[in-house]
Length: 145
Image 1 (cartoon, rainbow, N blue to C red):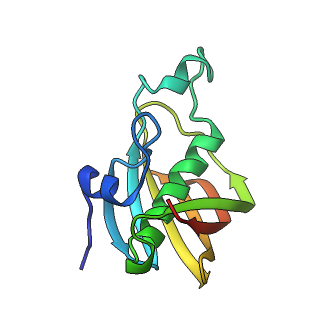
Image 2: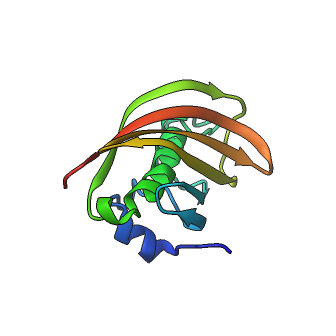
């Protein structure tokens, strides 16, 4: 059974706000386990003006941030971490496989693979129409706000 979140519910979990909130909706999540979310990249995103004007593509770090925010929903929705901040401490085995361009709806899947105290690890994948764009592993720390 799906456990979706709308934008207001996402903002209750994440501290991010416009223009840096990278999730438009959450299709499903299980606190402490995983999150499946979506980001719709429109042509008027602030970074497309300079990256690149004649061939706009989403910067890799923006996609990584969107994946990190999906992971943050998974971890910060756990009761003991509510109201805190999740910070990425490492990105490992990251591969950029395909570009993301204006008009793309990106599926962001993040899975928490280990938690010890206030630190953990996970893996994430960004896809467009079933095609892998970014795959990575990450480490994070949960911090007091």
